[in-house]
Length: 380
Image (cartoon, rainbow, N blue to C red):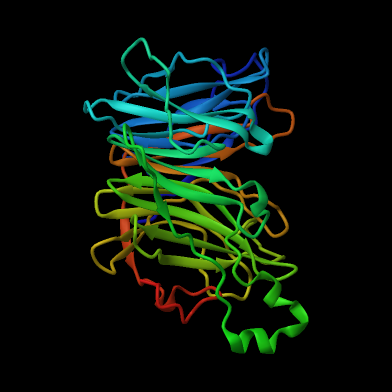
């Protein structure tokens, strides 16, 4: 049974002064699964989750800065207590060596340009978080971190790399003097496609790495979303899985060409929990066999693939740019997500929502991973 849509009106006293708020559609199952509004926030935010904890950013209009917020396994919402950030926190949650839950995030001299970014780590839930600067060897501007035990995965800016090779991906274990590099995927355009599409100048984009827009770490395994230009008009977006010293494995891929009915065609919030890699497929175009945007999970020990039997209240439409769903993350056996508010007069820009349980149905993993690279040998 697919969880249906209902309309829920919420108070936003915790996020903003009293104001009229447009009700947002949120899913529920009558008499059973009820969506809980975790918090209403002034600006959309990314999410991170681990061990029943969820973290996000709350914009403070009076300070023109962001607070780092968490919800604990009991559902209690509170600021973490660290200094505010000029930009949204790109935070990763995971276990510390001590067994406690930790958070890692970047603080930047210029976050918009990813300049002077350093990584900090804290223990959350301790009541008095001590922000520890991570002394990563090799220096550089480091951002988009993920945490597992004593290991951090992160991106480092490559200043001369431009759009072709803008970042490097590493793992680093605290106390070590060396980094574990990852060989990131690059555009591999089949020769026959290059010959057939000479007018699109495909050769210009051969070898491009592009952007790594999201990443997650579990053990030594990293999963990430890549977005790279593919032609003069269009880009490609991929979901990858990789270990240090090994080739990346392509899990799924989609073109993000113009005219996308559901906004940007990409993969939101990749997260590894146990044997599953979760991500939200945010793509669809009329006439293509992509299916609907959906939250899916890929089993990393087999070819089993499942789709969540829930709608998230998103209202994506042709020509609408970004969809209403901003981030989605598995948490405490259920799911937490951020839904953008399109009400222009509203003081709240988005809702952080939680559903305590999710049903799944089996779907077929697409042969060749679809997208622009059906012949790639690195595709699962």
